Length: 422
Image (cartoon, rainbow, N blue to C red; front, top):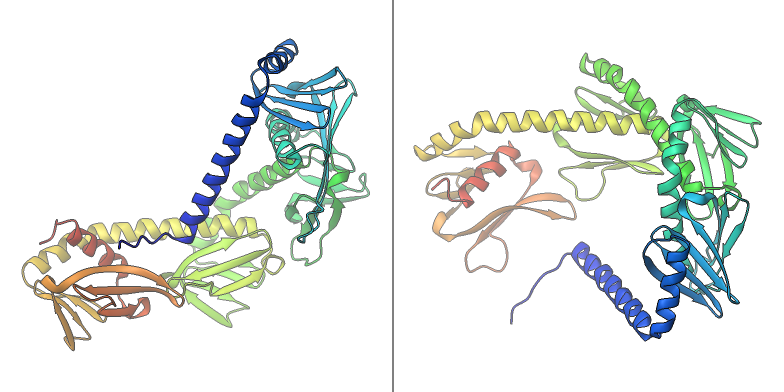
């Protein structure tokens, strides 16, 4: 019997793909079950209002919602109300999630046309969440460019009681203002918006999303303006880092030597760091020697995390280029030495034309018995695994900490497995 292993990510991807395929099949079947007359009428209505191609129909009793490529048409009691995406002035959404298993989530979306007419869509509509998501995507796609251009040009862009300009964000109808230089980030889900000031644990401003028109556009504009500010300052920060000045982000600092936590109480060199991940609520550091994160800090303890993210990405990219340059420089010499019969040592593992030895020859496996050499992840981090032909278990497992010049080892083994080195 052949056993096929699928990773969790692959399984999740397959489940999502199957669900999407099944949903598409159901929709095609539903449309096919409609009478030709009904399909023709819907298409004529979409054409009458210049709505482009019809994408999906949502229903709630006698209410029918035609979602089209250029807008949406609502049909009720023989009356039609249409709104094109380029006619939308605002989208309001009021979502309440039960956060439990009782399925009592409620969704309410309101489109406001530029002549003041409002179209409302509620839980009565089948697949209301999907309809609302699609409407928000289209409204954001059409309104964002103009709103972003206005904010970038220095004009105020108003979202109810929140106003965004090039350098500030204000709340409570202007009663409090926060410069972008002090803004850490904004966090928004379906229900609430939180605006955080750098170095503060509690939100500087908290508000229900239902009170904010076009909330997705607000998020996009703030993220863009904040990122632009980071880009302007990044060259100076990189220059300071390159000259040896530690760059401090609260409890976390980056220097040429590596990363320090809590004013040097914990240190780790760059050679051991796999990644620095900046998330919405936390900053996490991953090491090559550990599968799980080595250290996770709340974001409020690492102020200016947006700059931290860009600086860390720059450092890792520079190190990657340096590593590749080192490999390009050293690999030909290593291959020549190996071919000439000189054993190549990588810490506890040594490769020679005869085979693989561990701990200076205490264990030896000739090449004709070697099944593979590869890097694998496990609960404690990554490890080098040597497999033996005919064995179910591994012949030797070595933690990354026991391997020197791991990147050169990877490149060398890859050349061997491709047949370039014999």
